[in-house]
Length: 239
Length: 239
DNA sequence: GCCCTGCATTGATCTGGATCAAAACCGCGC
DNA sequence: GCGCGGTTTTGATCCAGATCAATGCAGGGC
Image 1 (cartoon, chains in turn brown, purple, blue, green):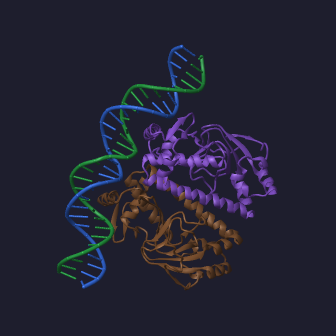
Image 2 (cartoon, helix red, strand yellow):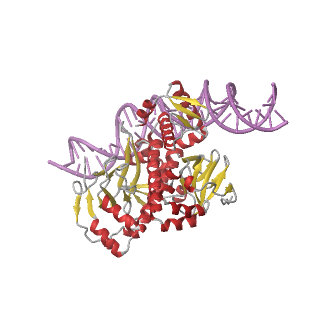
Image 3 (tube, chains in turn cyan, yellow, purple, orange):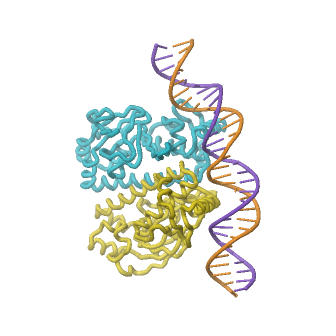
């Protein structure tokens, strides 16, 4: 479906403004001054996507770019026969549309309730043209993503199932920690199938590996997440 | 080893200048005007790395960034136990050091004889600061790399050995085609082990898959490369 | 020429994770 | 409470690709 931000996902006026935005300092917006933020604010459409709703689909024209302000988004590619690879999970503060290309290179859908600041791509790229420090920040984000992608290649190509899961849990814990949410307890709003499709495994292997790590006392499964019980061991494995 | 461009790899004066550089129009330099090119030229050290020599090592301080002008470089990460993942092959026109970070995120070594324009990172980033269109070009390169990395995740996580090899050969053929070298014959200067470590396979599986594709009449193995005999079929598989 | 050395190929066997198939669990509506 | 749909876990079996082990083959030194 061709889905503009105004068509799918409730648009509300920006409620409290960028200045009090909870993710401002970790997002691309951190590079902007107070008056630049006001310009940005006038371009922003705060949008809410309920769980399971699609933000955009691979190949679809990229009318908008998004700054995630709450919730978790899964980013994925599909093969014609239905095989799926999740290329990342976007958390609050993450930016979707770094490539600034005409169409999206992957699909994105909300895992839980997601709120995002949507910007029309044309307006956003015009702003980027005149604010080199915003471009610099976007470039930092892109190269950070690239580094993560290279880590993920190592994981997908050369690690065992158990190592994959351990690395994933450690990476999620670090990302949540940067957002100052929880520490030893890692929220996992995504399904087992999502984790499998991110790690290049099947759901059965992911499930078995969770049980193994639980029997090991490496982790403890709690509602909607896990608690890491033996960080030392996990870090040693992931090194 | 701590290896400055002047220490490892023969430095020669820039012989013919950027204006006649064969890869200029496909490299980051294409964003620069003639007089900007002259500034760049004064910063460049043209460096030759013989086959098998290391350009830089993962974790090493990134004193220099590189623009590859000839030859092929393998970019890889290692685990402590020696498992290796090649995260990419750099061809003429490719830029190493996009991240502009203090240290390299992967190691790089020359597969055949490589020539590169080396720039001190500090001088280069100073130039980037004052030339927003150079930054824009770097960002384009970074997001292009990111897109390729996401394709590679799909390949590593979800494709079979045969699909992996076919996608790899097609991707290499496209990359060489952009450089106006050969078309149906794809040069493969890297070893079978390199291909295996790029595709997340073993050398034996790569070799067996090459023989299978040869028996199929999908490819023909020629000295230092392959000839693609059934592009249609290959494109169908990779779609 | 002939040996050495370092790939690459081929063959035989093994195994980690996939696949197929049930259970068990867990809200949620009524 | 109970039934129902979806997800997760567990179990049994299979197989693509890994591993182990020769063998082939080309280029280089002498």
